[in-house]
Amino acid sequence: MRLGDLEIGRFVGRWVANFLKRLQEPFNWFGGVVGILSWVGLFQFSDLNLYGSSAVFVLFIIYLLWKSFPDAYLRVSSLTNRRLELADLDRILTPFKTVAILGNSSVGKSTFLSAASNRDIPDGATEAPYAVVVPIPDTRPTQFVGFIDTVGREYPNQVQMIERADALLIFLDHNSSGDDVALESVRMKEHERSTEGNIVPAIRQSSGEYDGVLIVANKADLWGSAPEAVEKMNALAVGAKDKILATGEFATPSKVSVIPSHSNLKSQDVSTVIKMFRAP
Ligand SMILES: Nc1nc2c(ncn2[C@@H]2O[C@H](COP(=O)(O)OP(=O)(O)OP(=O)(O)O)[C@@H](O)[C@H]2O)c(=O)[nH]1
Ligand SMILES: [Mg+2]
Image (tube, rainbow, N blue to C red; front, side):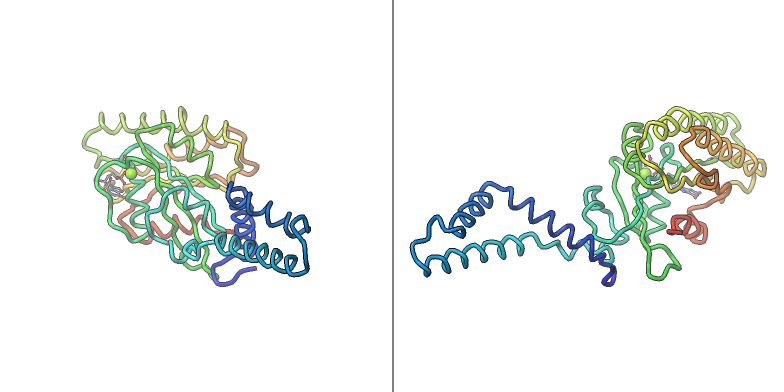
């Protein structure tokens, strides 16, 4: 059941979990034992004591419940489109899917997330993974997706994020306008290496089941003077899809999709990618 964007079941579950955690703290544990002992009568010498110790015990429980109350800040609507710590994702009380954004350095992961959440584009390479929760356009009631931006030049953090994500968004790019063939072929090889060497083994080893994988060929706005880029990128993206399907981790091929031509500079394209993560 939902109250606005608050999932009541999660809210109560979090409250109970917080309460049990607080109860385990030494002081509260001690207070709880003393309270129970006094309640069951070990310290009772008269009726007055019984009422007194019961009242103290009840007040103690009320105090703990008050201290354990889940923070209203964790309602997702107050957290959208902001840079969050990864730990914050686990504390949000509204259900949403987590999507890890993967791919080589400078492929456009952070730029995508900035465009998706109307934030300023960050300077330079990402230093550590972070998250942004984004409302999914055209959903009623509003659905949310939590994107995790990863560090392109560090393989281990991408593997960790693959492990914790519900779905994957893989960026590839064709960064040149076709003039520098050598540069372009180096980049294509980089993409193949990171798909084959990093992403595919991580999917294979991951204990999770994915709702889906979306492979996006980015920077289409640069391809104007390199018409063959469209075919190259399509072939690269479909090749990545085939390798991912070959892991056998996906029951249906439709779980792995390709957008062969995308630009982070076009808001329509960005919106299309976000909408791919709508709940069915
Ligand atoms: N022309 C064009 N440039 C883009 C596009 N997306 C990203 N860029 C540029 O590509 C460069 C790298 O983008 P980032 O978003 O920082 O790349 P990243 O994948 O986050 O890289 P790391 O943080 O190192 O992993 C920046 O100069 C962006 O402006 C796009 O769609 N078109
Ligand atoms: Mg980045």
